[in-house]
Image (cartoon, rainbow, N blue to C red; front, top):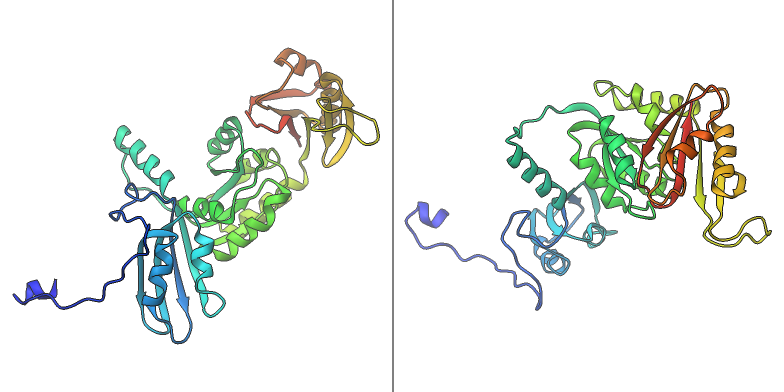
Length: 332
């Protein structure tokens, strides 16, 4: 560009040759075969941008490393953001990590183009990201204004799946709901790495936060929303019925039987209907409404589920489509 402006020959530039077999694509999300657009800052002493480019090109494309010997700005499209970060650690400090799911962005853009919707969106003060599995549960959360991260069949997303979800929310701050005990550590790590202010509310089930989110205020600060949700969750009772994956060592049930939980305590097992009835009584006793979310393979029809509801309690029934639980329950 400088050569053209001066009507002169272009200056010689340092060229970095990618290793054999590396894939090269034009810049732009659709042209990359990799999933995550990853950006971060690196600070240290004696940093050499050129030394890292070839290593980054081995795990991604659209590589850009700029800066000086004390500070670098890194951009790469990759499926492994953790490996990209690890190239700079522990010799340097990595900060301002920003990970975006490009596949999701392309789908959202195509939807906007088809609908003719404007790309100008208002940025909220606070948003919600929730980990879910099951299209019906995802729809419930989205109806309450949350952005959902698909946790897969085992409800176990990576830290970088969570970071991409945080990035996708049009909000300055984010409340993150892991919705499983196994996701809490990854959620806390994602909160540490994000350049947004993220508060993790350590939810341990998918259904618990659904009624609590009715009190969520997108105009309020993240700390206030996190405290409010935590108070609401204290008043919510949860339960569920799942199919036993193996025989019980104590002989109480066999693989394929129903096993029912109130909170994290197993309270019933055996046939699906009496097991669900026992769980309903434990969760909904003294409540006005019980929410029941049916899984993809739930073995009872709606009329049988209705027979399990305690007298005087209203049933709020939804098709959740979750793979692991026949029914998820909550009441307050």
